[in-house]
Amino acid sequence: MDTTTLAAVSGNVSTLGYGLAAIGPGIGLGIVFGKTIEGMARQPEMTGRLQQTMFIGVAFIEVLALLGLVAGYIVK
Image (tube, rainbow, N blue to C red; front, side, top):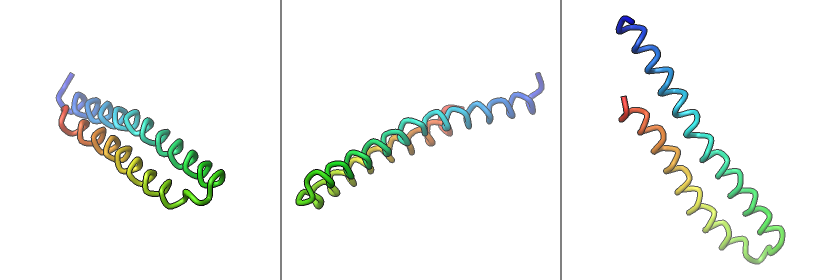
């Protein structure tokens, strides 16, 4: 194999790896938003507290997605 083909395969594997790493945070975000809306519907008086907790959870989930992106660049 020449180096051009090897580089192309390596780039495609990295892209596939990040795509797989983004699935987890995507599912996590869906669950967090869904449960927050469900909690607001059940107890409207807790809306403010639920939103605060949701935003903290979303921040942690997004960090996982960014780590997946960075890991693709580090491991080459």
